[in-house]
Length: 127
Image 1 (cartoon, rainbow, N blue to C red):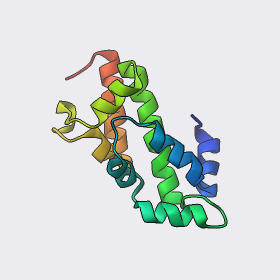
Image 2: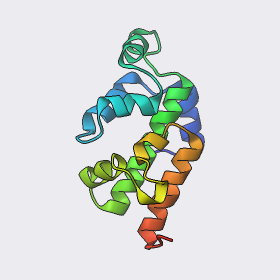
Image 3: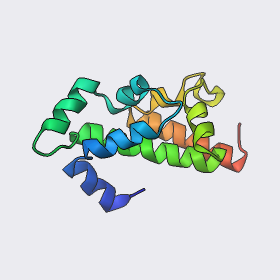
Image 4: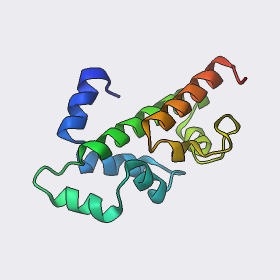
């Protein structure tokens, strides 16, 4: 996972569609629909971007893709495995007013709420 200036540069250049497709293929619980909802695009847009000269997502979808990868990595660290992390992301969470964490990743504020909850869980702080 990249961060800071490298993440900024990746977002401004655009995440390659091939890389985004690899992330999608790595999921076993997160569905295609959930993946595309987080990125804010649909499969046809992904195909068009793949066929473009850059072969990359736009800045908004790239930013969302990096946020998704970062949250999944944090969830794996906290919960111990990718299947457990994906399961948690796709189920309503008490600490998020019974919303599914994956649904909150569509915005920066929602992503921060999910990361905060994961960090609290890692430290055993639930209240």
